[in-house]
Length: 247
Image 1 (cartoon, rainbow, N blue to C red):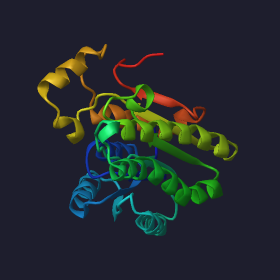
Image 2: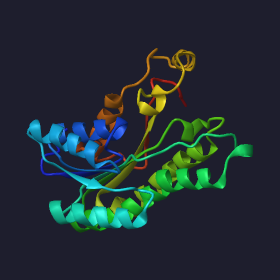
Image 3: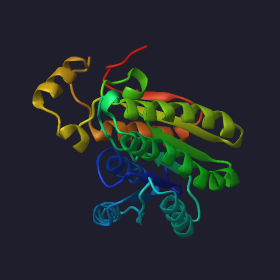
Image 4: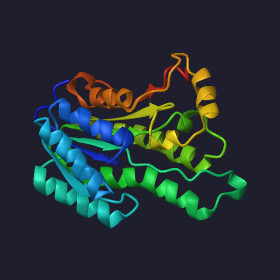
């Protein structure tokens, strides 16, 4: 999976899946524009990549803010001249039963998880169309496929990402641009670290492979979809869930 000469932009890159994706893409030879809200964490990530011989630059960006998306991606394009690979990973949760969920929590999750992906795609698509090559990879979730009580906003946003993925795949296929989604299952991240051991044990019992996934498991799938090896795959949802959801 040689990504030499490619430029990738990863949102939500300061931790978790985004962090792992940035490292993996850089390891395969891509120059990486890493975006998130924390300058300190981004600078640490850039340091990791450059110390290993890769190329990276940090762009502070709150994807809930349209103007920050526009200015951040404009800066990235200015520095790297193009963006070949977009990984829409940034996401949040605001869990609550629907009957108690505040509108602000619904809006925050939809804006951060779904609307930001549309806005980021809109800002990079010109670069991809111009060179007639591109990879758009949206990080969805198993809960966008099967739902989850107490996460109506999160599940809706991730299901929406899957719909966006398929629509974009149809829109840009003629220009040699693919658009796919990766749907992680139970992955060990800071989001899941706060869960009780009892809940984690219950989740593992539902996973045929018998273990929680790692961020590297997801990053490997993203790296594959970003490569030429995946050139005939588009509009697809790649499940990385240990067999938790089949069919």
